Length: 119
Ligand SMILES: [Mg+2]
Image (cartoon, rainbow, N blue to C red):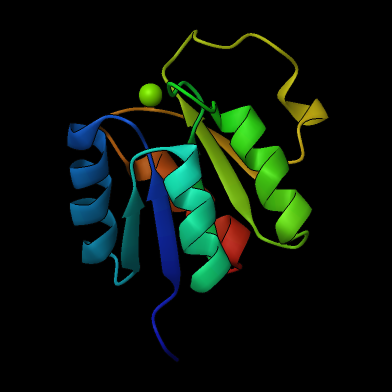
């Protein structure tokens, strides 16, 4: 089976590089975007099995980006990601497939990705 492709969207370069390195070790193929606009451009031309989407980003935040993604690709799986305590809303009201608190310890992220992909 070919490696699942994941698009990592985050405005912080250190997070993009950390997630890329950690997820490549798990055998995933990683694409990177540094904001919502770039993410939407990539999703229009490339297929990804999953999007890992930061919430707090300048320009278009992750919630807006999530809604735009679902407008163009209704079935695109998306996991939202943010630093602890940044958002206290009811995550279940959002149309994402998972939510992860951002951490240098990527175990929860990896597990959530596997759950969403059914691995
Ligand atoms: Mg951010």
